[in-house]
Length: 382
Image (cartoon, rainbow, N blue to C red; front, side, top):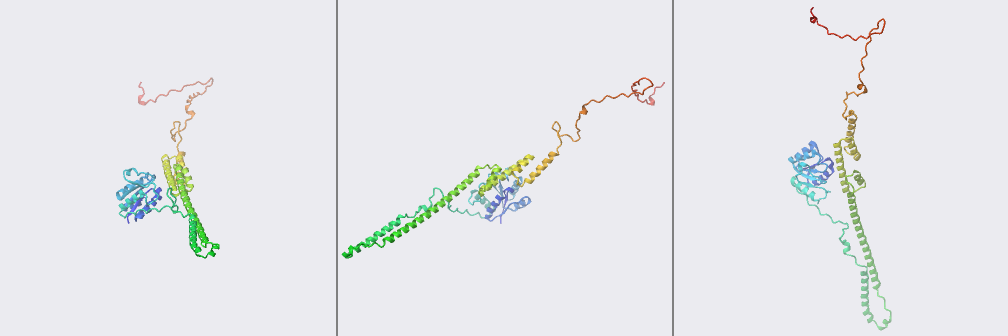
């Protein structure tokens, strides 16, 4: 069975799995969620490779290296999502834009990607998408089928009853004229078919009224349900469009309100984008404040432990830094601090008193000048 490898970032595992399920419909073996030597071995034996690019994966050098490796081993196809662009090494190559795809079989970009994959893998193309069933919801401008063939009005039953009464009276008139004269004085008997005809007309009219009421109720229910569905979807779309998708708090409040599956996926993708950007800023700054801001916004991130370790390391470095001098430069550990004693003049030497005599004060005798020792050979000759 031909093999297809999907290259993707770890943050794009869920979209990659959804794409793999669609590719398997063409009876292809799909490999994903691999890294290191495993992905290189899979690329060597694959028939087709799909590089799935997103705002998170285009910045990963390892993924670009694997795509370059796959380009020389298999038939490489680029697919983008969330309006991302392939990295610089592949900027001139054609890519299939899957932005906005929710797994529909008739999505034009998916049909193009499926055609390229099956063609390069040498398998039969996917069958055309099945036609969508007619929607049962109300569509403005379309007349409901029930309204095109209305039930007969209630007067039809009464008209039928009156016609039957007239026919009965016309049949009785010849009979009365053929009877003997004395019987003409008798009061004419009521037509036996009049009462049943009226009763039949009333029953038919009542049945028609019930049928009309049922049809009216069904039409109101269908129109109301379709209108409610239409308004709910529009309100959900308007609610997502009104929030700030660059605000972490706004996105989390939107997710807490239990949105639809499509809106939830969009909000979670925006949160992943903001987390990746915040992590990149913290790594670039590498300060305690930057890492604390990242943890404040994403305390449950997979990089939270790494961020805490960076904060501890930076604080230890700050506490172990040498003190700064007046010029702002760090002082040497051997430098002694200046004191005021170093600026005082040296004291003058104190004269040594000579031994005192019998009488009088002792005289001060300057010290004798020392003469250099003369060498024996230097003595004058008399």
